Image 1: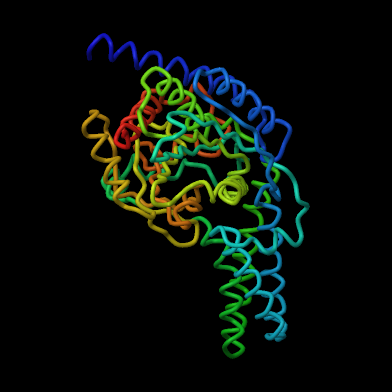
Image 2 (image 1 turned 60 degrees about the vertical axis):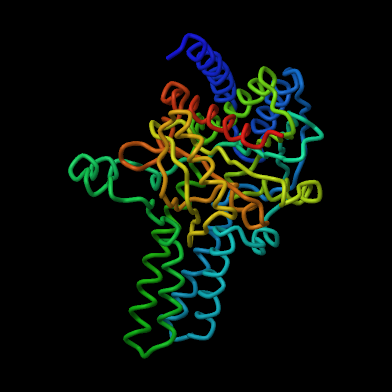
Length: 404
């Protein structure tokens, strides 16, 4: 490695550590004072960089997802009970409503239930503008500064043991487990039970009741869980944004406007990015705007995601952008894994559906999981800063591709 390159990497890592270690001290539960405090610190840090104009934007949110999801799961269980009591019409109605509501929540739909029954709260996005304000092309770099609550469902012990005993099986897998299917299975089983005779009704009702109870317990456990430090998810992405802003100051890119957008309430399943798109859609031309999302990039291996979705997988709009990211990684000598499908929901899904070319960078461990994902161990000292540095360098290399 050339001395100048080593010096550049060291400067990037110093910024990354500063941002992560500072913000990890905030309790960043969505819509909380800590989330706002973190956003205000980030706003000040961005504003201190020459050539960057940062702004705080208050936006609506309805809080974390477990309360709504628990309520929907209990509704599905009530449908199962009514099915067992031979009140199939009402049982089917409640089971169908629960299933539709869970899909609406998980797959980032219109969120009918949460808007009807939840109290409207407030989150805050940080929007920093850098680069050439008159640039013909716009690059939006996304991350999120809020943090998730933990729960037993996020334990990675089983995945690690499978990797230890059958590493070849894990290495062939390129899709994460669909955890939200468990919550949907209960209402669907109850609904199926309403369509048959007594035996089918009993089987469907009992299965729906059992699966619903399991889902409700797991969701309630997350509801009561503590908020994790969130160093990997997603201070790693936020830190990349700050380091990228400094790179743009030191090495400007002609003809490229850059928006560094750190969203709040991502862990509510995308309230922050939905509000950002509603506010800024008119100024972002899909023909000249590209989105790159940095979400949990502090595990040992950097990954370019091909598709995402909690219920079903959605490929990103503009696959040429993912091809471009892959080429730039190869040119920069950055190891990048591709072909993975993640059963998670990131902010990428919103601009992708709106017709913007979108690429998502995440990371994973040897056992195909995001390191310390939604666990109390997601602390700054467990972050792989080499991967976070590579993510920063890669996004800057991609940005140079759009230079005038």
